[in-house]
Length: 192
Ligand SMILES: Cc1cn([C@H]2C[C@H](O)[C@@H](COP(=O)(O)OP(=O)(O)OP(=O)(O)O)O2)c(=O)[nH]c1=O
Image (cartoon, rainbow, N blue to C red; front, side):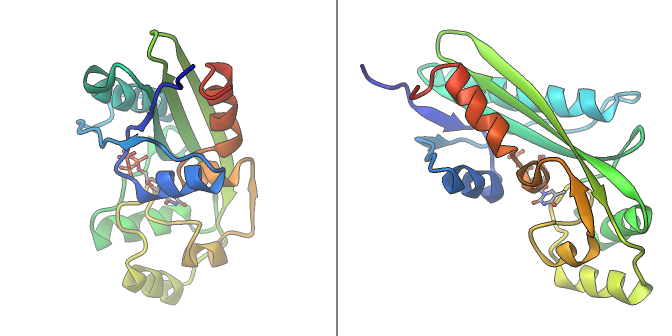
């Protein structure tokens, strides 16, 4: 029996790397171009779920023969969704908000099967930041590592020095919760 191909609906090099870490090589990587603006009163968890499914659905039409995997990573402080930092000002605002506090990283995951079945999961990790000095923030901004990252930091880089502990999945913070993703692929029968 031939196994249907796996398409990763993502432009994120992190997600591809994470899948490779567990020996999964997507047959295709197809970025989903979407409007990523959260709704006015949209809660972080609802937003993560919606974006993951929208990314998967956006590439489904062109890849109807495939399993399609998509994810979305949201950094939230209470009901607030922090931006994916694109400017130094945004990144600094995020660091100031996160400094000395704990926040949630919410990962939405969506998997579509070629026969129309779908699986969806949401994974939450609590992340504690130490209190940051102005010098630590400045140096982090200079590093540029915040660029394109939800909440303006990347735990897999220099920001690890700011994080004394997390509760929950580490890979979820980096961009894709691996245990849950593997279970979903298995559950829908991809290479079962
Ligand atoms: C919090 C955090 C986020 N991130 C990244 C993961 C995601 O790539 C990004 C959140 O943005 P996403 O919108 O989830 O993903 P993306 O735009 O990079 O890729 P695509 O939508 O095409 O799949 O932030 C880290 O790399 N490390 C971290 O510690």
